[in-house]
Length: 364
Image (spheres, rainbow, N blue to C red):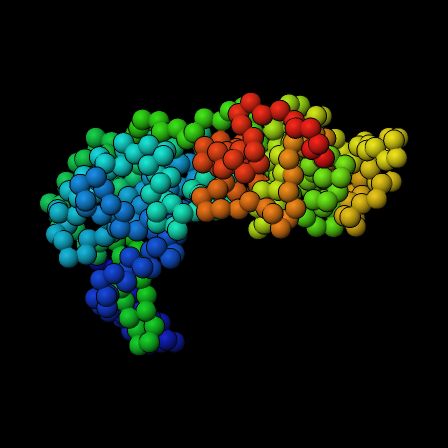
């Protein structure tokens, strides 16, 4: 595979000649920092130099928004045949990875951060229930000999999800360029279905609920009047609709931590339909004393209104007592199923609950 690049300066046509990339690891650095340069869409990097069970290390391991793994192996100083054989070995190892193994490897390469949370933040969607149902092998090279190319095409013909990405480094004075081409367009790649690797099963009860404090909502109001809320957009309204009567809501202030847990008493309604107790009588919440300065904005608009779900608090904490630890689930979604065992265990310990906890006397 040969690349050609020419610079056009008016009538002058000058070829930009290929060079050897200065440092062997530099291309790996570039791909890790800007993984989209591969042309595979958005990928979340699980880790770099990820150890396999045999002690060998994958250059880069990543995941796409469907939950498929991508094994990215650079040729470096190996022969093309060697790197292809290595990629196949890594593919055999990766296809057996469970959700827990993927999660743990991500944490070890990202300073203990929670994989599910980071996935949701990065892609703007929850992690699929089943991950690693397919995988992709990507060999990065400056070129292949004909026999190696034939080997790759042969195994691809039998459904092995391997492809070769060619990079050429070019330099023009102080300017540097990378040219990219594929052995076969990734859009046409055949990806066989693998074995399902499911993440932890949801218990059907616990929800993560983000308390996005601003002029429209305030944690002090939620404690005082017993609710969680979100709104001012269709996705927020739909998110609140996931909370059903009897569900358990874990309130989380973004950037601060977990501050409360309560049982949902009634599903979410528009703020104009929500009442609270003030001096022993029911009044519309917008007539109550509120810390949120503009909670009633767009109250008459069913699409943009704030939506409130009534909650009977079991335990609450101030912002200064919020629980936030490495590896605990947290993402940008307003409402998400809380299924991570570690997070639920820590929350139950700190908030003095157990799996059969009931509302405790004296809770606000």
